[in-house]
Image 1 (cartoon, rainbow, N blue to C red):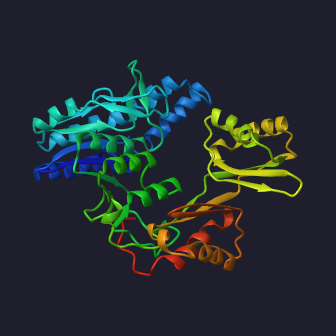
Image 2: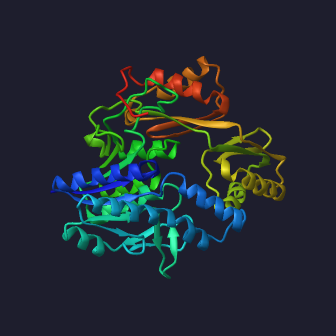
Image 3: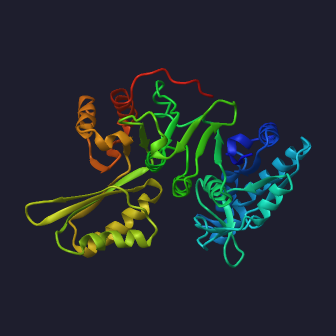
Amino acid sequence: MALIVQKFGGTSVADADRIRSVARRVVATREAGNDVVVCVSAMAGETDKLVGLARELGGDQPTPREYDVLVSTGEQVTIALLTMAIRQLGQRASSFTGAQMGMRTDASHMRARIESIDTEGLRAELDAGGVAVIAGFQGIDEAGNITTLGRGGSDTSAVAVACALKADVCEIYSDVDGVYTADPRWVPSARKLEKISYEEMLEMASLGAKVLQIRSVKFAMRYGLPLHVRSSFDDSEGTWVTREEEVMERLVVSGVTYNLDESKIRVRGVKDQPGIAASVFTPLSAAGIVVDVIIQNLSSDGSTDLTFTVPKADYARALEISSETGARVGAEGVEGDEDIAKVSIVGLGMRDHAGVATKMFNVLADERINIQLINTSEIKISVVIERKYAELAVRALHAAFVPAGAAEPREE
């Protein structure tokens, strides 16, 4: 008997028929002799609807505490409906909100971090032969206030619970049937990977791949929990996210990703002296703005330019803060650009293959695509380019780096 945690995204529980389909899959897993915990998101579109109401009645910046109280109700609707559907099939099941399952977080509303999980109630349900149906995305802080985990929080909830329970596997079900070497909508020849390492998946998630949330991969990697990314709409094998040594097909490049949700800011002509970088970036950090790629260019006259990227959602605020900072430190000017994209290649094989960066730059040069910024790690190379060339760059890099082969069938 295995302990399996199954997570179903919003499209998987979008209506009553799909909830019944999920219930049948859950019951089949239980009847196969496994203990089952199910984590669900809100029904497709429900969270957006609640966020819209919050902005309509609470303004552009609703009170964080009340925002969390509101948006957490989406998952509570789903756990109740799914539990009812499972019971209709003759299987015992009980629903658990974040508070009921002991999901303790810090007090950072709208982006809370998990601190501990009390699994006693979940284990009692499993020991009684039942299925535990838990609400993703939510928890409670020390004072008992409802908190939410931010974008992709249901993935994080599911993986964290699986780690706390020492589950054998966490299955992530959605409308995609695995992890592909590129977005199949842009690259029809993209291949579904049988296995991918935690490190590669973490890089791909951070670089724009939407399959898994970054924090969920970090949890799984820390505890060595296997993840299985699967489709809700068929029974085909998906992609396993696991330890590096278990990945048999060692590709130089396992995936090509893109991110269209970034913007660029350039602080021109500041003095090249200690403390300038801290002066520029400290106010951004204090405002909760995450800075990604940073490039510093030194000129012969002793001045320097600082160029960096921030999420597009934070662009206006980041540009305002940087302009204020630039005036204080005597910058020649501050300028921004929202019309950019970040395109990346990721692969464990890059560690011991020379010339990967050169090949990447030559491929882009052949397509007459200018590189604005470059950022690297041991297993990834990212470039910032004009947004209009993003799809062309992804197609060209995939053709150059990923071995040709027929893509496996996938659910549209």
